[in-house]
Length: 302
Image 1 (tube, rainbow, N blue to C red):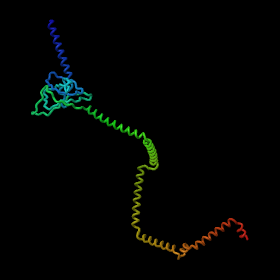
Image 2 (image 1 turned 60 degrees about the horizontal axis):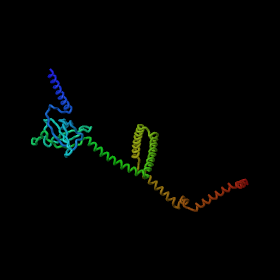
Image 3 (image 1 turned 90 degrees about the vertical axis):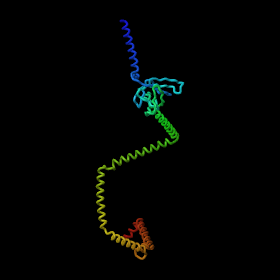
Image 4 (image 1 turned 180 degrees about the vertical axis):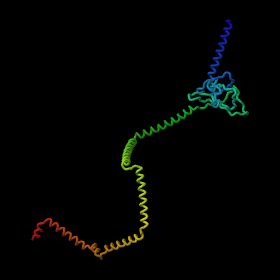
């Protein structure tokens, strides 16, 4: 009876060990009931790659990293062992790539398959594959951001240098003075525009109707004028104007000549002098009357 109890305890202990082993492998993503193949690759760095990291083929998980060994005396110190499903065939020329996994900086292995051909040999289990390291999205973004940041810093440095040069002289004062002048001009212009819009500009609709009405009236007047112009004897008017201009020219000629009465009046200096003397005498008489009115009153009474 005691012997049977020890057997039960041993069986329970063995079952517990098996469950523990199975559970640990299950948590690691290892299926102990499936057959698999192991391959190796050497890397200079791991970029946070760890045991149990996933192994992908075109984004599909086919296995995981089962072990990582290192030998820092070797040219490629890290030896990565991956376990993938046994039905996957790796043709010679395939590569083991170290890639980033997710946005948190994790790493994974991507199997870069070479195109299958019957002429090419297959890698056997525990063969060492050629390796490459691919930069992830975060690294690309970091490199781009750093490059942009460097350019921005250089641009800011140039701007600061230019501003310093401007501030050391009178350029800044002149710029501020011009800005004040421009602001004052803008305020004046804005006030004038408001006054024009408020007082001088009629409503758009009424103005449009009035304009259309005036345009129609103007067109009607133009038509009437055109009809009247058509009915006018232009040739007769031109002939009369020519006759009038000829008469005016004759009159002008008569005035300029000394033969006629008007010509003598206009051109005789003796007549002009006599008239001028008469005007002077009359002016003297008027002034004397104003100065001695009694004298002329006595003469009148006498």
